[in-house]
Image 1: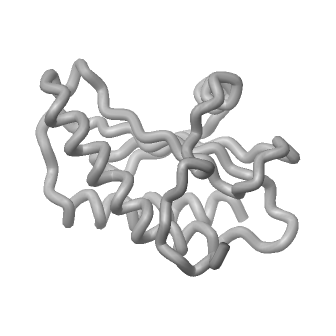
Image 2 (image 1 turned 90 degrees about the horizontal axis):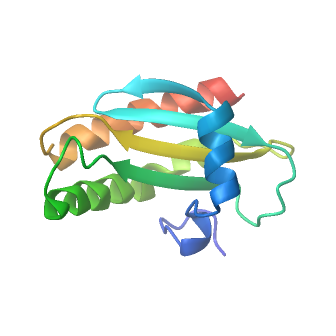
Length: 130
């Protein structure tokens, strides 16, 4: 698969309960408002992809499922368009990365605001993992 293509296949989604538990138990975090980013480098987890991503929007913050799904789609799309910023930080021997984006605002946000937050988050994450 071409590394420069802006795709977000199912193999890049974080779905294993064991990995999710590891991420939330031992991961480090920072805030790029309105996103909270939790990350955890993993050595040799056996997966084919370098970065596994989880997107979460709390039911406590946005009551309607339509709004939560809308924000999740926007976050995934912003990640898909900008993930090259993060994959550039991975050189040869870097470990795999478990990554979660948690939406912490209590209102719907525009695509542009989420885009700026995603750029800031990926830039900061790239600096932290090197």
